[in-house]
Length: 456
Image 1 (cartoon, rainbow, N blue to C red):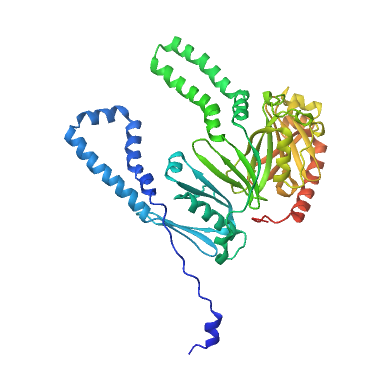
Image 2: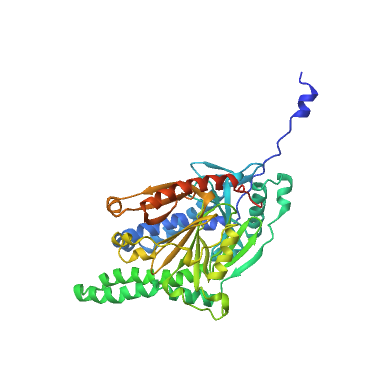
């Protein structure tokens, strides 16, 4: 007989409630069979045209009568067999119509949860959750949930990841946020025009298309070359404008929040403590640009773009364009205790480096402070990379045969985001000293660093 004390010491686990996605999800998944047919038709358009020409009206109607219900049934079944549930320690996602798959996502390994709303999803009032998890390259997602349910689930998952009890996590709600910066549409449009990428692709099209016409006199050949070039020009200007429209950066206890998009809205989060590298990118025409609203003593730095390398996350853009002084203040929030070294603090390579990389060697620079390892590269398009010492995983010295002859070497700093930052073309003795000193700074930096926690 089992004693009463044993029953008192055993806690019954609360039942796990599985939930389904939003009822409009089958409409999205029903397109899969249709997409297969469209892909086949595009792969071999001549064969597809011949097959369609053989079909009579009756046969075509019968095919549609079979295809549409089959697609609807496929969408319904994939929705019916998809469930998700939140337990005390993980998020479970069960999917699969024929082959079942169950994903067990540990809450403490979640690095970011983004809420995205494509255009049709905004019309239908639904959204998708995309989860960045440590150790996975592909994002797991829940598509679709009701817009309100998606935000509530995101807040609950973040609360549980922060250590709140399961009984109270759903009551925490989304952490409050404070808006830090909003990029005006006019500033974004001007910045895209000043990057030069759009005009570069258009210039290539203006040169290549007439040459192809003179050489081939084939309209199809000209179109095959012109369409990709015009598409690249549109993607570098119109496409980016649509994606980065109304870019808003806010600060909250669970990280920096980013909202953007004209047609498809995205609600992203940069988790605290997971940023490995910050880059300040300055295209040539941005350096001397003065925004009409940025007149004053502190506005002499031009515009910059702020990019990120985040461990376990694919989020890579923090600010598409901002005055330099504002960007530096945002960097101070992303990397507490880190300040951007001034331009005069960046030491250029020694003169022997000009024989390794003629002309462009002048674009390299290095600055090491108590908090950060900073390198610069580029003459026309400058990029300043900042790596906190605590985020350095390894340090390497690389010296090729030509560099050995000139007495210079490169020092590579590897981060937790599987990326490297390189101090190019330093004197060999300086590089060896930098290697030893950086290894010690990284060791002490990791020892004194604060733990990476949500809502810390």
